[in-house]
Amino acid sequence: MKRLLFVFMLIILAGCSMNKQTTTSTTLTQQLATKLESPWSIDSDGDRFFITERNGTIVKVEADGSMIREEVHLSEPLSDAAEAGLLGFVLQDDFDESGLAYAYYTYDSAGAPINRIVRLQYEEGEWRETDILLDGIESGPVHHGGRLAMSPEGTLFATIGDGATPENAQNPELPNGKIVKIQKDGSFNIVSMGHRNPQGLAWNSEGELYSSEHGQSANDEINKIVQGGNYGWPEIEGNESKEGMYSPLLTSGANETWAPSGMTFHDGLLYVAALRGKAILVIDPDRMEIIDKIDGYGRIRDIYSDGESLFFITNNTDGRGNPTESDDIFYKIGSHEMTVILE
Image 1 (cartoon, rainbow, N blue to C red):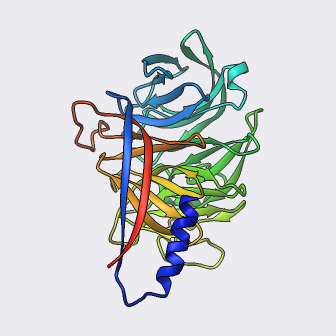
Image 2: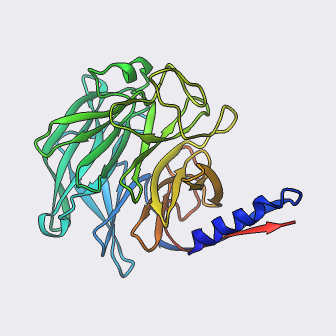
């Protein structure tokens, strides 16, 4: 209803071009957990929330608000490279029965960072790596990618960065600079290529996949992902185009940086966490325009919808923000109202 009202107001305003219009918004939030340590990814089993921290722990937030930091036993120690550590995390669809989940992390091999996707088993408050699904993803000092998400059909998807070696994104023999889907037997298929550092995945109600991507010094992107699509990096970026390559549906342009990370659809709108942008971008997917921003919380790493409410985590303790005494913080958005005003 809120979105229909917003669209209706836009239709009315289309005939009032002589008037100036502004959008005001009010956001009410509730702190669910504080003092998180460089959190990266949110998921929930419907009763509890689980949040990965880059140092290798998972924070469980119970319905009563209690917060428990749980150990994750991995087969390799985490890399201390920039942007590395325990990153993406997602629960298997039958988590309540199986206790299975998936994680994306970076470790070191022969002095170089390597990305790996594994299956985790949850038992008695601890997480333990049981299977390696995808390994040997050579990375670099930055651009690890790292987002994991389950498709509506229950297939595991992952975003993999170019590892700061741009030409790898155009090499079909390497997983770098790709979005991939992973089968339960560990085999994987490349969904799309030509990505720099994609960190967000979300499906709309029609089952169409969208991704967010860090550009080089601005030119951040929101893309609609097509099977077999080439999204251009490093040959094109931002508003540039080239035959056989997809240009983004929305870009920050050459003069603005969002550093977009996690994303989700909620009530027909697309919500994108922005690190450098220090906001949640609220996007109308029909017009592919930013219609509002939720800001005032610093760097935002991930956002999650349970179908009824929105939840997000700040990322001010990762060495690039300005943390307060309570950072980092896990929030619930109690309400978010947008109003278009004619002046």
